[in-house]
Length: 520
Image (cartoon, rainbow, N blue to C red; front, top):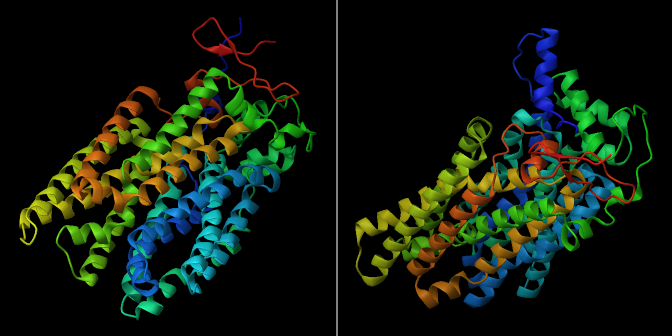
């Protein structure tokens, strides 16, 4: 029987010790820059969420919309993004991760201009369609690219950047609302939406200076190009070689192969992947897929987009009636959310995914319950000002977004980008994004109707119950992935990838020493 092969981190540390290499301060500047640029695509979604929370009030007045039309307008972008997220998996396997990011920015640029120049509801919805496709592309590709260029020791830190930029975008959207709120109803929302086109132009240009993902290069058989990139983003030449061997192994290329260019089976470009994921998945792949779907579902089902998109309306229900005061308080929400996501980036690789995630969801449950209580009390004393209930409601919203940002927010994207095997990563991530956006779309397109049916306090009690279910799911189903290589995380789910047959099937045979090994 073969013994399980040690993971890349263990082997690397052994090699360094044998060579007597001195301890060096880790230098991730190049990988850091790549992660920053790739993750900036997420700012597109964040800006749209933030700006629509305030623009909705002005759009409703200018275009004379009903509450149902407002609900649909705010939430429909999430459903439109499904087109982009599913197309992004195949597109990124076809043209590469880098050019997919450029494509996403270009699509959003067109969508933002269409929304800014919209003259009626139908035109505005068409602009939302185009922008939504761009958002879907961005949400899928940013964490995938970042995970594929990040060394294992800093992957949690770097892969959390998409969530950092989502929050930065939300904050910018809130600031844009406040800045243009003094214009007329006819102009204010058009400026709010239209200025979102400019970041996408800058993003599309900057991304051209990034390297391509080394894992995508290997899937194209371009080993020499992949080696060059790995030497730039790894801590040492030894680590670069070990990462190269791991990726070649996952792609079905013999480790002994040192050719600059090799021929890869056509299936590596995406054919047959959906079959492996959905129709006839290995039990371990099924568990990975369930985990990804579950974490994306619970991230949105616990109500975060309802809080962020409808925060002015929530604060109005809490007793803040001035437009400027509502928009000013939403800026505080955006600032809090951005601040605490930065805290999370520091601790993801120090504390680990599970402790942060479980602490985050526990805090969210408490905050949702207190928010439900505060709004219920205010609702039962209509016409009166219950100061403690107002203060409790505002504080609960701020603490809720803070707890979300230190755990469930960034870890959803980090974790999903880590757990899928190389061949399934792009499409697996696309499924996660699809579940995320569908759940968000359903919640945001029904929030007003929901709180009219069960009261606004009851809505947050419901979200709190869903968050409690999420806590149980995370505790029982999500293993810790901190410090593992991307190829090593699969083993946590009982999947050991040592070979890929010519037709692309993953070969997994249980070993007899508590792990898994590959049949020879």
